[in-house]
Length: 421
Image (cartoon, rainbow, N blue to C red; front, side, top):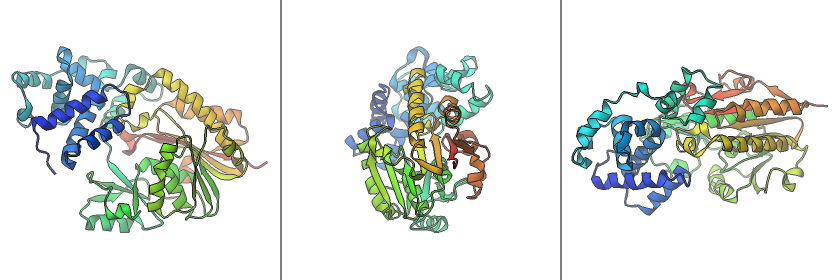
């Protein structure tokens, strides 16, 4: 559906961008609130506004460099449309003011080669430096380019209600172009981004929206029928639903989280899914008595730890401007404590999967290495072996998913097993 580009529509983008650049709240929440307040905007109009303001968040530093001394929200948007979204001057003509066409012509000819590597990659300096500890200087621009692209829309088939082939056929019948995911046997990737919230297949629980990489984190748990399983940081429950389907709606699956608001979002998803073995539980912190009562009894635990979220910049580009080195240090302390607390739940022979959507080694390998050094009863199980049993060909003892290599969000995971005796 093509958008009708008008000064009024551009003004919506300018107003919304001004709100986003305060960085007071997560960008997706600000955008959702704005659209609720402006219900006259249709699906195509909302798509234009969201993608254009997100283009500014993704490419903020190089856009500001092109604007130089002429920086304003309006000019940020014009540069984003011209340089990032690839519009030409004829397409921009409906909103241009006197002198802006000549200015944009000079912007288009701007030479970025003199800019610093961090600015060219549209990364804050601190993050570029951190990435240099895990990636080469040649690899970071490729990674950054992938992070600066909008993410595709992935679905996870609900195997309690259908299978992937049947879902693909039903989507095709509904005129929605889709294909099997490249990695997860449960994944379907859509060509476009249709509105799905009121689609009969969604309302009937045939699928959930979930990045393909996120699905692999659930597959690493390998939850089985009749087991006792804990999703330790369940949030809104995307991975909880996958675990429940793995368990074929048997056993007991506890969805723990410190946020009642996040857990409340799980309830309608549970109703659609057909699952009845899930027990949402709000806890105060990782040392809550409700956690301690399960000590030594649990077969499998998933710890999708609170993290910087820097692997999700395709969806949440504001995170790179809202985080800093100090916030990473706070997160690593929290991750260490949560992992240690979650480990106490396992029975001998039980499995713990530690996962993040971060790109930083200090939130990933270093947390796991420190845990293994302090907990000799645990051993690392090669992630590639666990996934190979499920038909997934991803290499490595620990799972590293990267947007420029796997076309998923950036994810890390390690499989830890508590040994008998």
